[in-house]
Image 1 (tube, rainbow, N blue to C red):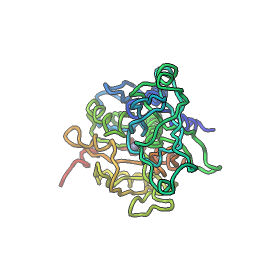
Image 2 (cartoon, rainbow, N blue to C red):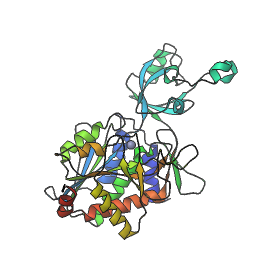
Image 3 (cartoon, protein in one colour):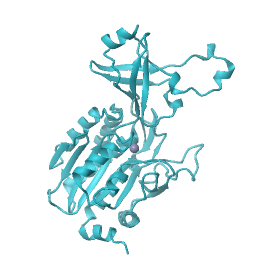
Image 4 (cartoon, rainbow, N blue to C red):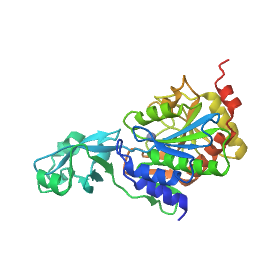
Length: 360
Ligand SMILES: [Zn+2]
């Protein structure tokens, strides 16, 4: 197994719902430590790596969020079942009959979301959607005291989806949870590794951010710390290449190269930056796809609104079935996203930043 595949497996399997990104942060810290010239968390827990001179120019910022969608303990019922609050947007249907891990002060606790069996369900309720308010997590506790004292479960404890990374049937497709945005975190680590070998002209900051899924909160504070001249957000894209989706909803396809978002509900990118990336991609022979989404939000919008406004774009690894226990990405898209991003950052100089920011 390749080093990169092992890293992606580790990133996908790591549990890190919004606000509890610790296990992911440890991986990023371990990987960035030998690469970065400086590595420090901000006051919310985002991890910022710097490569190059502190006073170098331009200041290029990469972001990728460490958190994933998940749940949080609301309270434990007298019978010992865990009721929960959602962290980020998962469909209610995606929560049913899954494995979860609750991170307690006594360690990880495995649980499952069960619902009533069809044997006792009325015909009417068989055809109804189950709402999250009706759901609970079964941790095998005998009562509330057992759950709290023996297992250490407390209100506020994070609950992460639990599913193991797999390569899908000898293909180049990787199945795993949390490609949103561990794919981006992986790209960011590998881009920094590449820039360590062949440096950029200015200073590069890589921020592994927290709490993106609950409102782009970590990107807000880490951008304030960095004060970038230009930004590239690295994300999981949205593929529209499977039954039930269409081109009007999402345009990315797995295996056809990294994506560039031209519209989402949080940001319009700098179009000259789009052109610069497309020109670079063409020169080095990497296919690129566009995506125009109606919804979605991403950390790039926090960078864009910083420092009086800066050029930013969202560059993606196309992904199927986001915000669930099983999402899919294509290894070639990942590798090409790394190569392209590294080359774009390497070519970025002060003149280019000035050109991107000229409004005439
Ligand atoms: Zn994301």
